[in-house]
Image 1 (tube, rainbow, N blue to C red):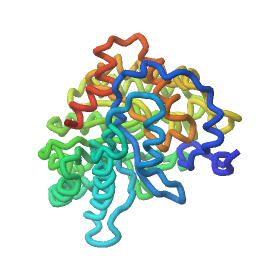
Image 2: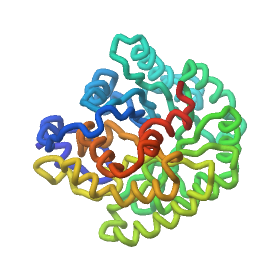
Image 3: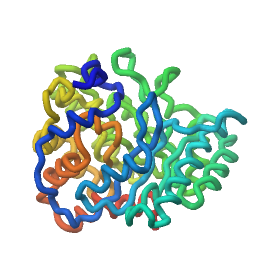
Length: 348
């Protein structure tokens, strides 16, 4: 067993254990022709763990019909110098290069990083304008939005999205001014927080109605630390907040990213990874609720790889999602797996 996996704590990221993942129960690819846009994956070299084009393609080409992807910021390859607010542009430059490699056709038909969601510090307010302009130039037409995470919880076991994170980031006037500048460019805010913070997202969506907001990871449901053993209570609170958020027409939801923070299954303690059927059973209440509340036209699936590769292979991940949506109509599936993503991120 990979020693890093043995030391795994929910909320923390470790490199995947390929030998352990190879033990996952295999099943035929469900609905192999269904086009999929993976709306949330990373590319990085982090603590000796490499996840770049070759590693990503090895996952994308495991049987599902992945037609394109959207890269999600992960603080990778920032510029080494220059003004601090412009250093995240280096990540977009790095990913745009990988996207160009993919677009050459030399790596197959999948359009890797057809969309890029990068980072800009929206608390700069109106002063974020030159950062957004630099990101748009660096993206070469692929830059589609900014993720500015706000994950905060007073329980130190949870792990905040940044070491210096303070509560209520989305309520700050400077952040909202920066979001206004983002919206003026037609760019999306990918919001990420934990489920007790969803009231902040609701208030943000109402305060800046011209902004398009995509809530990552089904609203950041927590199931460990102070939230362990409280699944029914957490679900009820989360559902109530999501129902209120669904009333905001400018909000979309990414379905995925529940494996680690949600802590539904203690995957690291197992001799082999949970099967697609087990993951589907664990995630079904959240996925079905979100689709019911927001509708397929405002929901899109994500892999959250390589983070979720800690507990499942790529083929099994998408089979789990397809098991949950088996009863959906063809039109609903078209939206959930690709159509919503195309509209949300204005993909060609």
